[in-house]
Length: 216
Ligand code: AP5
Image (cartoon, rainbow, N blue to C red; front, top):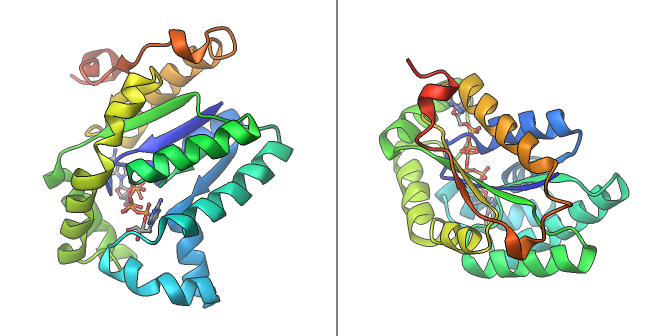
C-alpha cells in the first residue's frame, strides 16, 4: 500500500500516518520529523532550515525532495510500500514527487485527505504546545502554517481528485474513529489497486459517513 497524506497542520497526519504504516507494515516517511531530526542533530541541513521551520515557512522543494527520494529508495528495498506524511506541500512538489514515483515504480495508490476546521486544528496544536515544545506551535506560527496550507497546499487536493486516487475523510472525530474509517477504506482499496489501472479509478468522499463510523 502506498499512501500520501494531504492535510492541514493538526489534522492528524502524524497520528494516522503511524497507524496506517503499522497496520500495513510499510514505512512511515514524515518530512517534518526528518527535518526536525536534522535540526536537533545540528547537521548543516538542520542549521540551514531551522529558521524556516520556526517561522512556519516551507523549506526549499529540493531539500525535501532529496530526503523523500532517499526514503523511497529504502522503502523499495523493504517491499515498496509507504505512508508519506508532509509532502507534497505545493503543486511543484506534487509533480516532482509523481516523477520520483514513476522512476521507482512507486507512485501513490491513495492520496488521503484529512478534513478538519481551522478552529479545531488551532485548539489541538495549542494543546500540544502545552505538553511538547515544538518551536512552531505558538499561536502566531500555527495561524501562519494554516494560512500557507490553504494558499498553496490545499489546491493540490483537486489534482489528486482528477487522478482518481483521492480519499477524503472527516478528521474532526476522535482518533480511533478516524482511524477506523481510514483503515476500512484503505483495506478495501488495497485489494483493488493491482487490479484497477489508475486511469479507471474514482475518488472517494467519506466525509458524510460519520454515522456509519461511530457518530451518535
Ligand atoms: P510537519 O511536521 O509536517 O507539520 P504540520 O503539517 O504543521 O503538521 P503537524 O505535525 O503539526 O500536525 P499533523 O497533521 O501531523 O497532526 P498530528 O498527528 O501531529 O511540518 C513542519 C514543518 O516542516 C513545516 O512547517 C515546514 O517548515 C517543514 N516541511 C515539512 N514538510 C515540508 C515539505 N514537503 N516542503 C517544505 N517544507 C516542509 O496531531 C496534532 C495534535 O493533534 C497531536 O497532539 C495529536 O495528538 C492531536 N490529534 C490528532 N488527531 C486528533 C483527533 N482526531 N482528535 C483530537 N486530537 C487529535
